[in-house]
Image 1: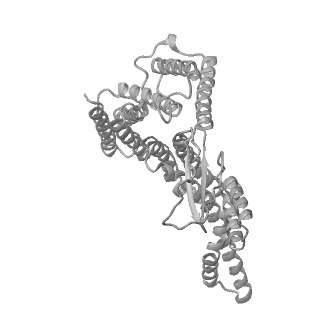
Image 2: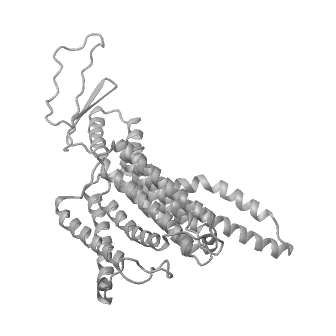
Image 3: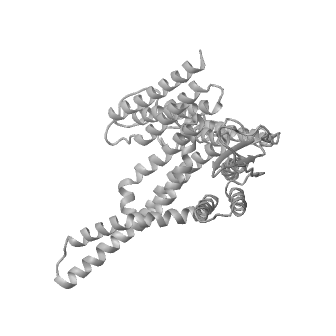
Amino acid sequence: MRPRALAWVLWAATASLVAGALILGLANRPEVPVYDVPFHAITLTFATLGALISSRRPGNVMGWIFLATGVLGGVETFFGQYAKVALASDGLSLPGGVLAAWLAMLTQNSFPISIIFLVLLFPDGRLPSRRWRPLAWVMGIFLAVTLVVGALGPGPFPEFPSASNPFGLERVQPSQALLVAGGLGGLICVVATLLSLVVRFYFSRGEKRLQLKWFTYAAVVGLSTPLLLNSFAPGLYQVLGQVAWTLGFLSLPVSAGVAILKYRLYDIDIIINRTLVYGPLTVMLAAVYVGGVLTLEYAFRTLTRSGSQLSIVASTLLIAALFIPMRRRVQNFIDHLFYRRKYDAARTLETFSARLREETDMDALSSELLSVVQDTVQPEHVSLWLRPQFPLDHPPTNWPDATPISRAASQQLSRSAHGAVINESLNADA
């Protein structure tokens, strides 16, 4: 079977498992808990992105890991729901409930393992360097052993207390010390995975850094938003908490898919800039609005001993009037703080433009132009050639040839103004 066909067959299997889980949930009794629908959405998202990546780039192992994660999620949801229905005391009479519970438990333990290797190999399906191979093998062996121990551990299942492991072995029962060591080992695996992402980002350049920016942005914004809502707006979190967590987890596979497929890859810097600007701006405007409404309402009640809708109208008009100036101030602050090079370059060009309209000395202008180019573009070498005055239809025959440039990343910029030609030879090391 071709890789593209295999990818979409696995996607269809995942979709069928999720649909079967939903049907079992609808056929279930009200007192039997139903698996959360957001997990179904996350499972389908992983499977869909995995199918897209694997069908377009079969050589990229990330697509197959995405797809495997989606399949594991589909198996967990279907057999978990099946076991809940089959093992319920007054539920439908379905065979194989204990085996379904075992499969659900096994895939539930496998799901985080696939997430760990998904982050470890992001974005190109390779380790950061060869030095990470021994650690990756040790992590794989450790996680495989913990998975086998969990699959053969005796006793009832945590999610299904009425059923015991049909493949449980007493000799596999881990002691308390081994459980603590296993938890510590799992924590070390998570820390090592996050450390690999940090190391990869530190040494990355070009498109790879942009890919990592997409994933990092989704992780920071998507997972911090529900936490901030829970801390600062508990009432709003009660209403939107589940949606916020669902969108936060969905942002991880979606951002990873965008990064791997390189769809609108260079927009991430704009998105980060807009988030840094409009996030604090929204908080400040909300604080001004709430403060204005409370202050004016208190003033109206003091003067007229009754409330008034004018406080809301006045606060809304105040927000509309403050939006543009506050946005400019926040934008300048963000550029000054996080985009210092761009901010300094813009200021330098504004100063030079004002000086250009007043300067008449050609030597001073040439010297200042070279200084501006050096400060803003920061080339390895800058040269300025001035063309002597001659008619445009009779160019000179002895025009000097440009100095040969040995590097492939050279670029020549030519500008003509007031009879001058400026050649900037930019030699950038790869």
